[in-house]
Image 1: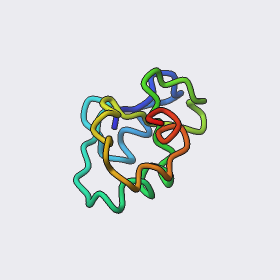
Image 2 (image 1 turned 90 degrees about the vertical axis):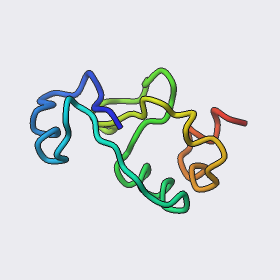
Image 3 (image 1 turned 180 degrees about the vertical axis):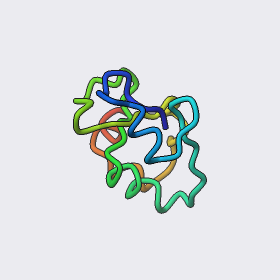
Length: 82
């Protein structure tokens, strides 16, 4: 996950999530990915068009979720791969 470039005060978010260089990598079971993306309001659209005030993070490589069934819980991801 990367921090959205248009977020105000990114240093606060980076500190709170222990990010390095505006990025964080998570390792989790595929069945939990969709819930994590929704809970953290992570954008999975390739062009990161969603509002940065409500979506602090985006996936730098959304194609890594291809085939992950729980990713269908994220609206913009499921629409993108239909």
